[in-house]
Length: 323
Image (cartoon, rainbow, N blue to C red; front, side, top):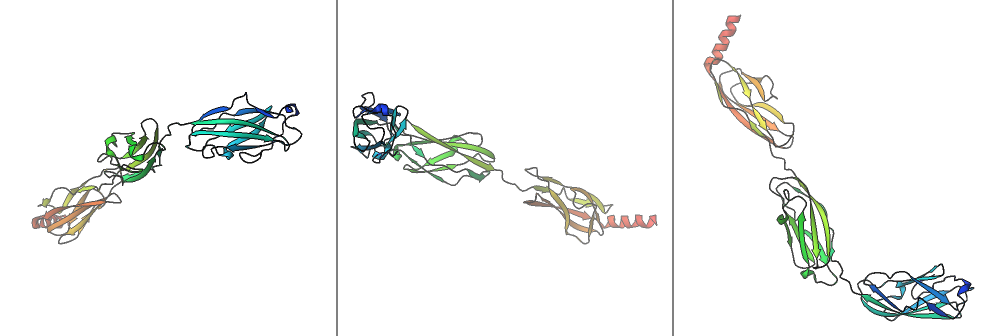
């Protein structure tokens, strides 16, 4: 079985032998909505020789509205099923001549088809998910809109956020006035997380929406090192170092004490610990540095320690007495 201007072979029962006529309840007017196929219509056919294959073909007075290939037949119990599909976005009227033939006799039915206009929903292109850094903005994101009946410049485009604490509605800015529009989203300063933005385009009656995700990644801020206050040692050559380190995340910080300047070496009890002791071999002025790193970013802070000559002499005298 074939459709439209092509022949469709359908085997029909012998009980249909009578006058050569189509019959569909004597209905010759069909009204359907734009872009919508008709309901299946049952056709009875009389007068053809059911011992021979029966073929169907169609002639349309308005192929732009109802192409002949869009008129489909298929066999069914007790008759044939007809379905008519108008061309996309077309409205108006067309007269269809439906023909069934067994190769000798042809039965014909005239059907007038009216396709009523409906308001098509606007179109809106897909917008891909986005990922931006904390306190940043998306680059302008292009998308297209359109409508069959309404000029693009007259379409209304709006945007809303699923989480206004992260991305306020007013922070989604739509630009452009034609079929190509752009969108820029600016989350709140210092906030991170995921949010969905929904874009809607409407012609005043029908609307279309699309949503996409914006993932705002937290920025890794550098840790802060504090080596503690400067010190002066008068009666000892050993002191406690009490450093601190702060970070914005839960990263495990790496710390290290080192000597930046001094007259001699310095012995640290544990150079990798924030809280440790330092032993100086000679008097003078020392600069010690505390370095802190989260693996990506780092910070340093220096402490100045003055070891007085009397402190070294006192320690040396105590050692001689112990001997």
